[in-house]
Image (cartoon, rainbow, N blue to C red; front, side, top):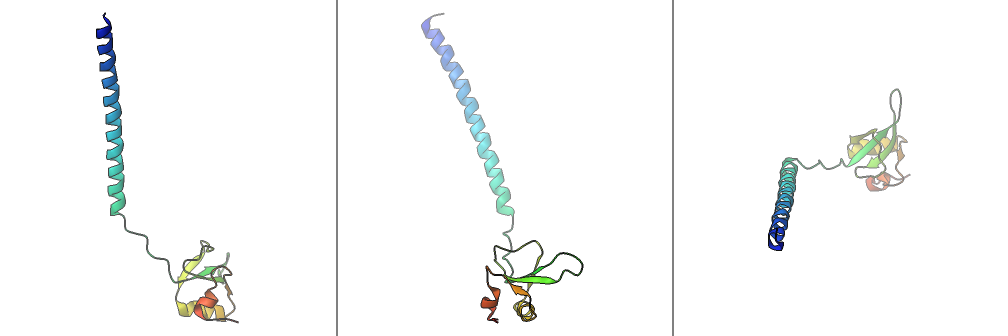
Length: 110
């Protein structure tokens, strides 16, 4: 073969590789568009409750701490509470979280 025909073979090979790369990129774009479409249909997460009461472990699970709804130090044993219920819990001696200070936010101080 001549140098010209070798070069043409190389260019045809390069073209095939680039077309495969282009198709792979198009596939990635299509997958990302599908992912974004699914994400767009999901509902946003509900806002956190205003107040939380953390319960202990075991039988009866008594309340152990009161938190402001967005507190970072909450555990999985928290339940939403109204402001009145949170105030009542604090008045009954349930500990206020030392990080979010619900007693200050509710105006209930010792």
